[in-house]
Image (cartoon, rainbow, N blue to C red; front, side):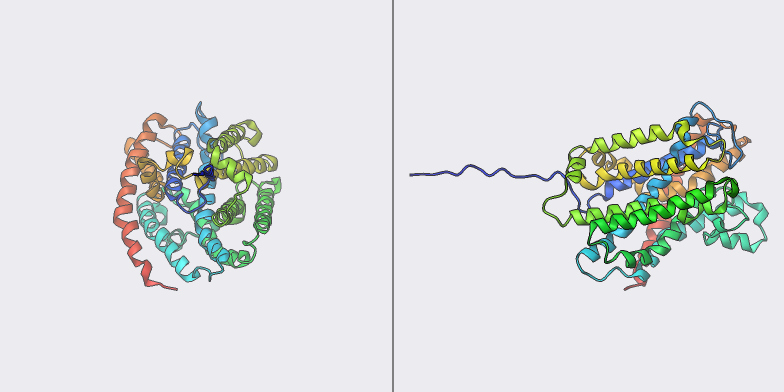
Length: 394
């Protein structure tokens, strides 16, 4: 007699917590870079009012473009995620942590050569007041310009956020030491995130109380943005845990099955942050407005990243991992670095003044020229210097 057994149903876990998310994250970096470019073009064309720069009163595109500042929190969350993941893997596998010396060397090679090039160009072309003055040049080249009163040269004003990110690079090995024993318990990592987020919220309060005045220097420093990096660290720890469990928790499964739902949450948060609830860029925000803006930006950045970690072959991840988004993502650092040089150069060539250019002309011009320069920078500077990574070993 022939017997047969009923086939056993194969359980497919709809998440991918491995590290195959890199192409999608490249695509998200490209989106963040384009958001930053559109924001700055919006300011320089008068579409976005800027009380800091004293440019424009705002145009019809202002309510949307003004909140493209969320591109910076997206960059910060991605940095926390990608840079902390090796430490999380080492802790969970009971291996020695990555070498801090090698890590810092790699970061320096990744950041400084391309930055020095654009900084020198900007100093020569747009900062004639610094010619013959050594100290402002030193501060610019060492990314310590956010800690001084001399200001940031035209053409690289956006690099305040790069200086903040470099500060995070410097403290990450110390944070990793503190988190080494905590990362084995997800609840402890959430507690660590809560502590860092509280520091962030406290700094936001300090920089927005009336007695602080508008735009204090502390508002550009790392504590003001620590929560975004901490969120990336928490995502790195969570994804590392999920790569080592047989049955993922329900939230991870839901995100894996419904990745667009996460992006829907990001859209709702973006609509909320674009309302008067978070104030206006025409004036410095109040404490309540700044706190709400920070929380909504955090929600947007995290919910944009989440589905990319768990479904590399589906939904938003598949969209962002396409050839064009991922290619732009690989040169996104150059896009960030060079776009303000293009903007300033265009204004001088055309004889226009900041706040009075045409958005629908300046934006495509900036994107086209910036992509070309960024691609050249990647091929001629960023990629070749990677060959020096092996000079410092653990």
